[in-house]
Image 1: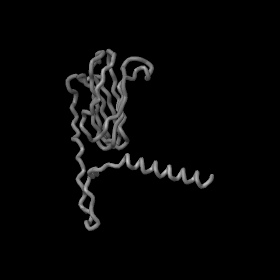
Image 2: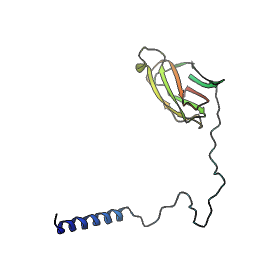
Image 3: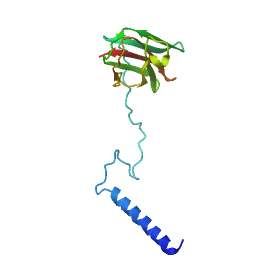
Image 4: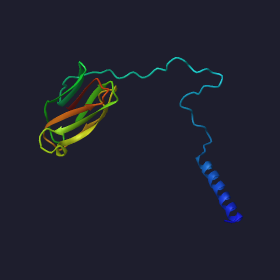
Length: 168
C-alpha cells in the first residue's frame, strides 16, 4: 500500500470519528443520577438504607380462587401442597398472585387438571419474584372450561411461599 492510500484511509478514519463524535455529543450535560464525592470528602461509613421487603401476607382463599399452592420448610423438610378450589370458565379473566420469602423467585405452572399429555395440559408458566407485593400483574384468559392445577417451584433459599389463581 502506498503512502497516498494510507494517508487517505487515515484522513477518512479521523473524519468519520470526528463526525460520529459530533453527532452523539450534547450541548447540555445530562444530570448525574447520584452525587459524586469529591477527593476531599471521606466516604461514608454508615450503611445506606436498603428498601424493605414487602410484608409476607397469606390471603387464605379469597373469593374467586380457582387453585392454590403452598410451600414451607417444616422441621428442615421442604413441603408443598396444591389445592383445586374451583373450575375455570372459558374466556374468564384470572390473575396469578403469590409471594415467597428467603430466595429470589419461584416458578409457577398452571395446568388443566384433565388430560394425559403434560404439554397439552399446560396453560401458562412463569416466575414470581420474592420479597415483593403479591400482585405482580400476571393476568390471563384462556378458552378452557374445567378444573386447574397450580404448582410452584421455589428457589432453594425460599423458606415459605404461596400462590393462588383467582378469577377477576
